[in-house]
Image 1: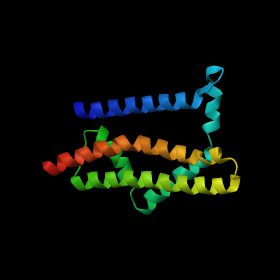
Image 2: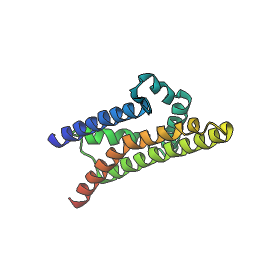
Image 3: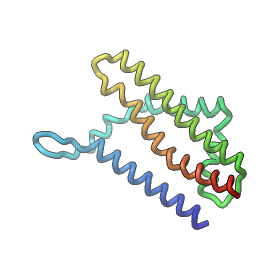
Image 4: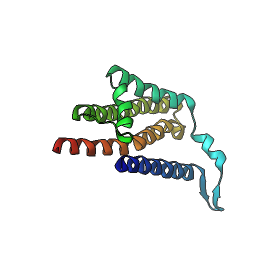
Length: 156
């Protein structure tokens, strides 16, 4: 139980630090006048259409590969006392990979199509890739923890 609690606490700390670093990166402006913090800049990084499109591609990939339940299980296995088999662990790892790949596909589709349509506004077309990086950054620790659990299950 202690290990499960530690996994959850470490992941929550990771998410909080990631959120804080993203907030700093989005709000701090460095210019010749000095360093300025403007929380209104966060709105420049929010595009609901892009977020929904990237998440829709993720869910489409998960649904088509019948991995949506395995993604749910990935979170359940890591943070509950429930026992699971090696096969379930590997299916959860695969669903995490599918989520990351789906996000990458959706982000690339939007980035390329927006870059072609906008021509001179390349910075706006890079926003989908930011969402991909955030999704992958949130999934990576879960992937690593599950890989470690699979390794322990294989050696038992």
